[in-house]
Length: 228
Image (cartoon, rainbow, N blue to C red):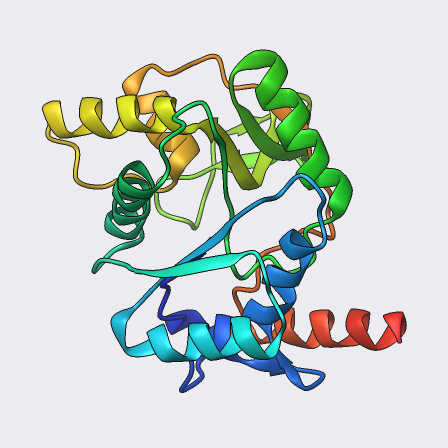
């Protein structure tokens, strides 16, 4: 679980994964979703060093019994991802193990999404959570005008988890190092850059949205209140 972001777009003093919603942090909500799934055995959280104790406290207070370790991330999300993979390769002996890489700031990930990721990965070798776009996309060089568009029928919006066997993640990490890649937007973009395709779709959900802006927190808070 990736929880190393600094949340510059949220305009808060605390990273969004540590903001409290209905008395609990976003991180705790997200960890609990994976704690509840019967096929999830171990939970690891990649975080900034200064938030390590907070992660440990959240796992303990939330009774996240599947939590195993807080992995110290890097200066970028890509470096944090690589640190997480490297740690798993040291600790997990069975490289056939399935790894679900999830954004800690997607706390509404459902049990069905987790199940579909595992099933698709076991069947096809990987799984990328995605939903079909409801809008067409304008193509613009400067953000002020457009001369073309991409039909929505060809577009999927990627979410997380991104799911791969650990041995595939090892191969990807080694290939990225060999090619001198030091940045990629996400695990699925890295897989495309390295040619680890095709990527197979696990059906996501519009509720599995990423908390990015202040309004996202308000929406999430309202949804949590409806659950009570």
